[in-house]
Length: 178
Image 1 (cartoon, rainbow, N blue to C red):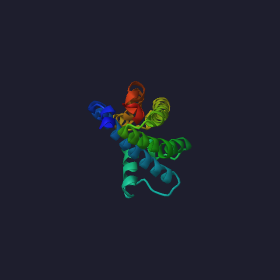
Image 2: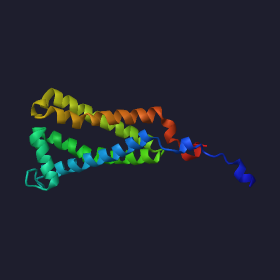
Image 3: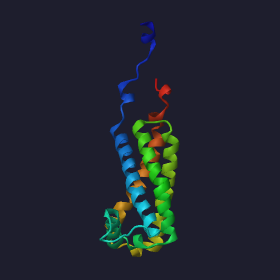
């Protein structure tokens, strides 16, 4: 009895996950899925292992639609696009998913992984935006869809970075939350 009286209970507000954090976590897992899978498809497309056409599998049809209706550059096979696809499929996609899981569980390790994720994502999307704005914007056939699919890749790393730097207390080690 005496031992249980000396244990301090964690306030309910500290143990609950804020709704905005849950939304951010889910968005990052979804971002990982919608980044890694199509970019991995592009890697296979680049290697001539799959097709991008209206008669291909579902991913090939979506890739073909995007390449004909939004950005014709998506159907090109150049080394720069391939490098970006490799980065997204094997580095950023998995980091997005890991960050989402860490945010959901409010794990202490998400601070380091999340900072790496936000930094890599900001670099990649800013590079993409500048390259397209300066060199390849002519290949975009639908500006509204192009920017609607590009801007979340800019907004989410800023939100993640702000969360990890401003709300560090949410990710303190469990033993420190007494």
